[in-house]
Image (cartoon, rainbow, N blue to C red; front, side):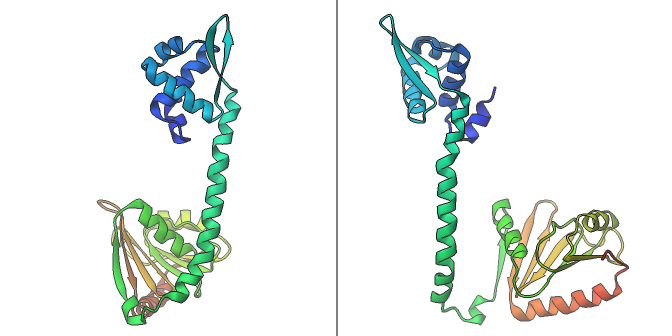
Length: 237
């Protein structure tokens, strides 16, 4: 119980078992803690020392014996303090170096034209962040699934009524949505057009993303989008 949750905040498997055992036993010897945790006694001492360093356990002497006891579970909150500081520091460093690295870049526009394939969720989350932070005009999308709203002006053409209804209900004030005059099932992907990029997402049998970074191709897709937007059936805003 709670082992997985404790592992998520940084405790090891044995460390979490020893912590829970000690918490349930109250002040007790390492031998009894080891028995309840199902961890060997030598390893239990190692885990106790680790927990003590984290401020989660302490020890005291009584009648010539050493007893170990868990501190209040409220102490677990202290484990995130260092992580929060580290994340803030990383973000600050990234914000400082990205503009400088962009200034150092001497890649020609032709060299920047490329096609990339992404087939893992982490990379695709990064692509979605690119989409949300697009800074050259409005963002354009054609999609068979609901798209999260953004703080940037955007237009979304949905290709099925269910996604259109959900997307329209959750759209921000900066987002316009329409329903395309297409047969249901005829389009089952998402196309995002932003800056000089075209992003194509396919959902079956697994999530795959393709990004084309080319100004001319992006402009061609924008023209096609404009034609489809003009012939679409409904406008939510």
